[in-house]
Length: 217
Image (cartoon, rainbow, N blue to C red):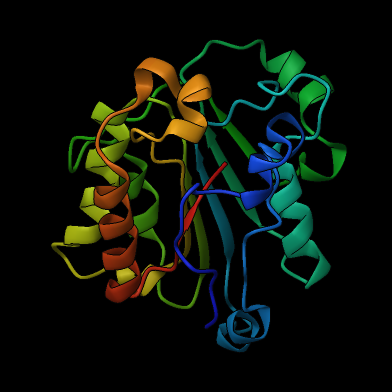
């Protein structure tokens, strides 16, 4: 299906005009919902894996992941399961009463631990969740944990796809790759690692592999 081109600044180009206002905008993303819809079957489960689920990170503003969910819902994609992994300790009562919109209560699984990048580890959700799904399911993966030593190996695991399953199961992949980029240096600071060229190569190769990869804000 159709996707947006892979270009710096790795999110909406509007940040060049108004950085603060457009930093978390998703208006640059292109989704071919017709193509995705045609792949669905009556038995398809709709699953979203959110690695780095800081629901209150953006204060009172609507979080990007909720914006993304709303966009899918406009085209009839309502997720059956949303798995949110987050290492920062949070009060579950606050998560479910304040941070999480009511419509996601039935489908949301709050998992307040960090993810592992070790292949085969039960806290590596690619192993313990994604590999338990099948090709008929509609699967979205978001990776944004601000720790390159963990998230880059996870992205590389998708690319290597040793068992040949990820490219068959994952329908959309979103990743905030913290590389050295002047426009975002003030936001990413010490988390930057690698180059824009390396990031473009990673995302391009994921797409060639059959995994529609998008930069995440």
